[in-house]
Amino acid sequence: MEAPDEELMAAYRDGDAAAFETLYARHRARLYRFVLRAVKSRPIGEEVFQEIWLRVIEARGRYSPRARFTTWLYTIAHNHLVDHWRKRGLTLVALDGDELPAANDPDPADAVQAREALARFAQALEVLPALQREAFLLHEESGLSVAEIAAATGSNEEAAKSRLRYAMAKLKAALDDG
Image (cartoon, rainbow, N blue to C red; front, side, top):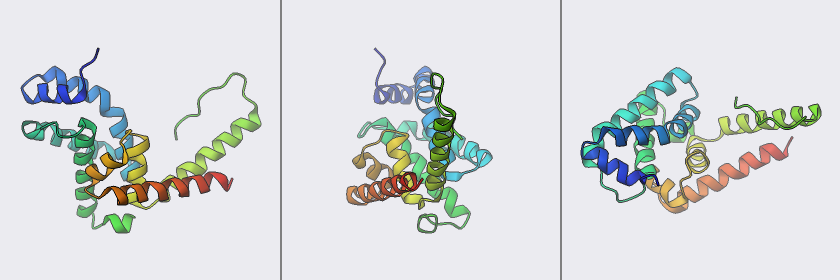
């Protein structure tokens, strides 16, 4: 049985480098997708992604498992993204091509329809206000609950729930319009 994230982070805090490697392997893909969708630029996304992990490394001595590790990690990510946007003169209010799975002998018309739906979804995700997009990605990409989203973004649960609800409604409408 694999150790929980919180246990691994505590071990890393206490000097176990292998524990960090395990945490990084578990969370790098989701965190990278979250960052990339937030900044919308691969070079900037890679830089921000690395800076977030550097902040995790720097903060290891202060780590205390008061919440899930993912909540702590995405709080660091959120705060770094806010700093990133502020440096560029943007505010969260102003800010407010995966492959399709292969099917057995898919109908070409169905494949075209699925690609079009995916394109509509990607476009709708792209134009969501930043706070709504962030709430959606934290929920769907990172598996955070509404309470964890609120904790990670420094908002209250009602605001997090509202942002997530609006994001879901807008994304659903974009898919239904097709």
